Structure formats: structure tokens, C-alpha cells
Amino acid sequence: MQLGHVAEADARRRLYVFAGQADTSHPGSAIHRLADWLETHPNSPVVKHTREGEDIDAVIDVRAVFQQTFDQLTYEDMPNAGFSVQRTYPGDIKFKTAKTSEGKDDSIACIWVVYESKKQSSKNLPVPIRFRVGLMSKYRARHFFDDDDLDPEKPTKMSLAASQRTPQPIELNLRNGLDPVFQYRRYV
Image (cartoon, rainbow, N blue to C red):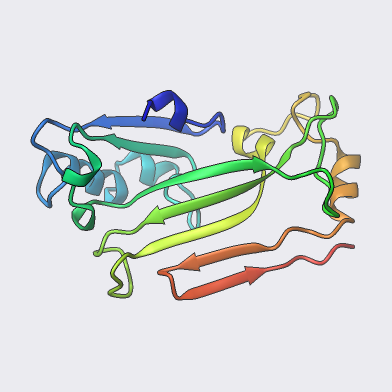
């Protein structure tokens, strides 16, 4: 797998951590200690810049790169890990995406999958996973703190209003594999 094929142009900061040759992420290993610090310490940039209720990788996406092959790693000992996939909505459905002033789609479907380490999981499951599917604005993802009405990448107010009048996609949120939460917003 090539790193360039994994990164998405979604305005999040990237932190690539390269594990040492013998590091398989066992508890106490260097990469495990770094991941714990990034996830929990008050001075960690991940903790400082992630708002309450947001996914841990909403602002800073941390990726660990191991030298071993996938079958040589011990996944149950790893700190939280995850990925996201983003796709445009097809044009032939009832939901209509918000558009930029240049006519480009702003609304995308995003799928997030996060493996939660056993210490983070509230239930003792064989594979503690969080899974979420939802609507995401490309502009909001790239411009987290700023809002520029003159930016050609920003969806127009008229297209946002038109999009909100169409049936909205169903959102799915699964935590620990057992508690599905479906959200459906009626159109106005």
C-alpha cells in the first residue's frame, strides 16, 4: 500500500508515524506509548484540537506505518486505528447535493471505520469497532475554522437550501458493534 493512495484531500492534518523494525505495537512499545500520549495527554495536539464529541481523527489524522506484513502484527494490542472512505452521491437519486458556484458537488458520503483498543471499548467484544456512514460537506472538512462567502469552493446558499428540500440520506452510527443509531432528517 502506498501512502499517497491512503491520504485524502480533506483538509485534515496528517501525522505519519514510522515504527521501528521490531515494533509490532505490543503494549509498552514505542509506537504504543506515542499513540497513548497522542490520544490522552492534555499537551497532545490531537487532544488540544479535537472538539468534544468529534471523532478522534476529525482534525489530525494519525497513521502508523509498520515494517512487518499484516499477518505479523498483533491487532488486538494496537491502539485505536481507523480509516475513512469518501464518495460522491449518484446524480440519479432523490437527494440533491449542495453545489459550489462553479457547479461542483459539495456533499459527499463518508464512511468512517475505527478500531477501538480494548482499553477504550465499553464492552468486551472480539473486535471493538465504531462504524459511521454519513453526509459530509467537503467545504466544511477543508475550512474547519473559517467561512468565506467569496470562496468558489463554498456551496452557494441557494444550493444548500435546495439540497435541504430534498430527501436527506440516512446516517448510520454503530459503536461497539451493538448499538446502531439511525438518523434520518426529513426534508422541508
